[in-house]
Image 1 (tube, rainbow, N blue to C red):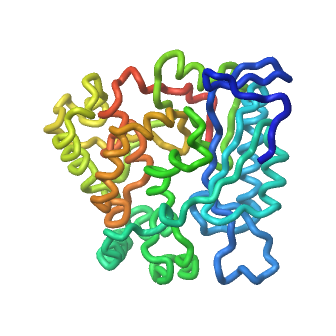
Image 2: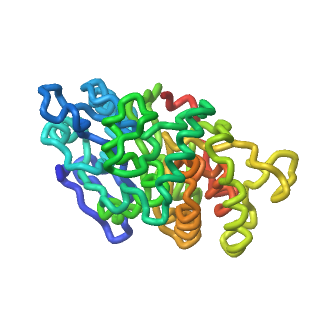
Length: 347
């Protein structure tokens, strides 16, 4: 871990940077990465590259994109607060990665290894059924239908539908991990808030306030930049599964929820999901909400249903206030969702 000088925790859970005389929230910037080489190139002299969520391109360009994202956030925001960075990976980070990212950060930097049990196919998944479903989506030309970057079935059987079958030997469980595990990683447990960072993003102007403080003071739990319709072919049973969960667990449904945001014409529970979901590529949210009983039971319910593998449930539809899985739209009140001004961020 690389520590910023003059930093200590206070009893209230926040931080005070003595060197800069700045108080900050108990929050972190987090990036999930895959920083390894596929098996067929491990012995080649090709430099390792950074692969975030996709695991297909292993060129140095990916590392540059990640560092560029850090530079953007440091220059536009974090130079004022020196929030820490947490990097998570399913393989040990290289010395190159540690040196370059630590050198870019203005605050503490920590590197965590993902538990293999959380980055593998759960025992209750029928891998043959999942493979058949993936093949069917490929035949129907469903977007990312055969992408091993979202899902991966078994750690030893190449996926013949992927353009580079050898890559199928690497586990691809990003969406499931983002939906139910990253906030429980030991490095994340000391934090109350997080800001998800993606590679190759742009911030067009300096952010003159602390969004963590804004959310805490205004009692928000989730913030987003953009909401778009999801591809229904990737989540055909997610809404029905969510409604069934709510019927079985009515105590978790917020009274002042955002149901009318995801169901048109005020049809409520009788209506169809309209596809609206908040892109989770950018999100600032409460870690305490994810760890709470309502969301944990919801995630476990979805996980047992198997839609991460039998369909193509992404963490955006599951993890955000929208989309059929509607965590926030149903489990949180409308007051607790915050829109971050769109002209600050680009991708």
